[in-house]
Length: 119
Image 1 (cartoon, one colour):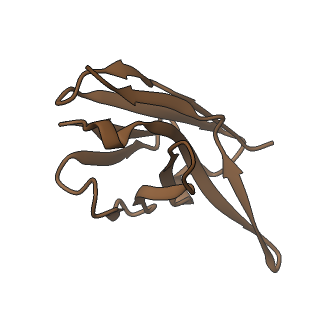
Image 2 (cartoon, rainbow, N blue to C red):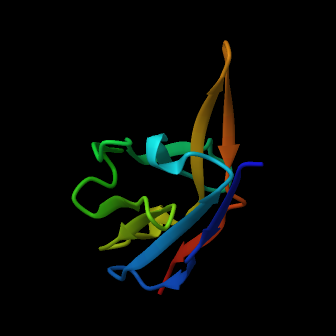
C-alpha cells in the first residue's frame, strides 16, 4: 500500500534552516505530483509547495523565496528545504500525494513532522 513517511522537523531559531524529507513507497513515485502542506494550531491545513513529475514547482506566497521543494525519483523522496524560518512557519508539516483510481482520486498523507520556530 501507499506509505509516506515524513521526517526532519525540529526546533529552530528564527532565521534558521531545516530540511524535511518524505520517503514514499507503494506508488509509481516518478509520475506523481508531490506536495507539502502545513497546519498550525487552530488553523486549517494549507498548501506550502508542490512539485510535478516534470519538476515544475509552485509555492504559497508566504514561503516564496525561502522554501524550496525538490525530489529524487531514484530514492522516491521529496524534500522541503526551509530557510530564513519565521515564527509563523511553526506548524506540523505533511507530505501529500493524490493517486487516481478509475473515476476516483485518493489522497495520501504522511504522518506529519513538527516544525517549531522559536528563540
